[in-house]
Length: 346
Length: 279
Image (tube, rainbow over all chains, first blue to last red; front, side, top):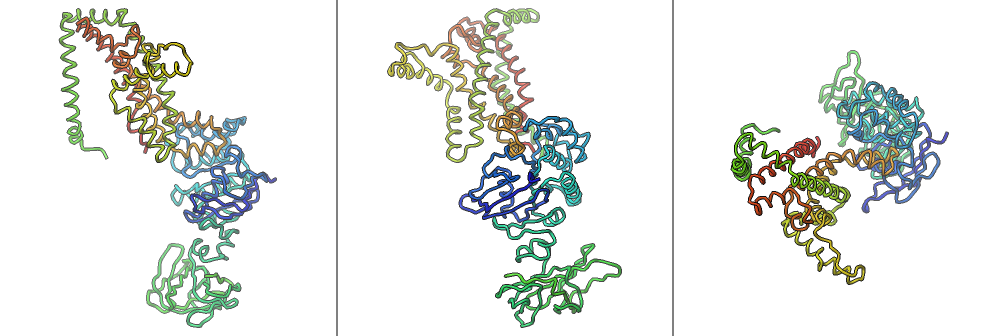
């Protein structure tokens, strides 16, 4: 089945001389949950608009289900969509909102299919309500039902959970993932929330300044970022400045720290996640210094340690039985394995 | 935030005073004096019913209704696309169109009506041009018929329709239209199932507003209309100026006022100003 395949080939789009998307190539497999993650202005929404057909690329091709759809009208693309702020029609009730894509495409069995979609998102009994009578989470479900009702092989979602509070957002993530797996649809999901991206996606593409910086499985992009931007964007990270020499970083004071990869010669950063660093000696790389502050974050205790040379190391330890926080000013040693650190070009 | 009650009343006071002194007071004085001439109590009522039911009044009400309805429909047919174009126009284009809608609005109705007479008269611009290029041999009678009244009134009332529709259209979330397209809807379906329903309250409010204004029209039909197409406003003027029959004029005015109030009651339901800016 290739119906769900999405491919962007060297797509570029400028708005008034400013490049919104530059030379972007993406290949999404049928049934894949693919997330485009980036800060605002990174080009992720423009990318989604071009896939939907609301914007036409200046150059490059867009293929949906193997067919060139670069310049096709939105209605010719047969996509399901969840819009930012849901775009629920205020003059239509829930039933007619969900029926809209079916009626627009002249499809049959409208009642049965609307009911099925409403059952899928667990909104039975709400058919005659209007958008303004629904909670944020219910509106989100209506938008979701409307996106899946026409059984499109490809569904686009533009920051669908952005308007929900944190608890509800996590809950809806699980539901979206369930529905996507059950229906086997391809989802292209746009968000600026990295936790959401990691929780949901088969693969994540990280965009910045109109370009795709890295694409890969959540764990891969989290643990092996290709540059400092990706490292910082996906959660907390320690980036230690120095010069790359083979598979090691030479710091300004002449000491060496080992990494898992060979860096490009020149100025570089050594990257290691706070949860890979532990308090105390014992691993290949170690630094000593003084505790700056200790923050209690519930399941985590985060300690910041000044190791000299304007470098602060962040260490995350899981809160457990008898766990104590370090007092600011106390001497401390941090250490981590070479396998957990990578050299990134500065 | 709602104003304190007292302050709200104070702010309303000047306009309430103005309305009372220059509208309600003279109106009451006129009606009181005029109807007083008819006698008292039941005499007034039976006289009034006779006048309201008279052939001249019935015919005039019908003519007024027909002309007002036709004018309203013409305003809607021209105003809807124009208002839509305004919501899409930007910069200089927007300012040009809004100016061409609003400038006539600031000009006296008499001036605008005379302008049409200059254009449409027997030796007017249109007739001269048609004869010069040989389309017609003699002058056409373009004035003093029902068509010319509807044309003139549509021209005068168009801004009310356009501004009402524009405000309704501007409050429509354009992302809904894009969403409809993304869900497979054709342009016609987007218009009929999304845009039109979302602007319908504007269509109703604008139509009622134009209709209310049209039924009270006097200058344009008097100057541009056919003599047999007597609108209620003209009939009232004739009773006062020519027949010097104030009681009849008063009863006719009351009938017109009653009809206007009924239409206004419907209008105020649809033109809720709070809806212009949905929260």
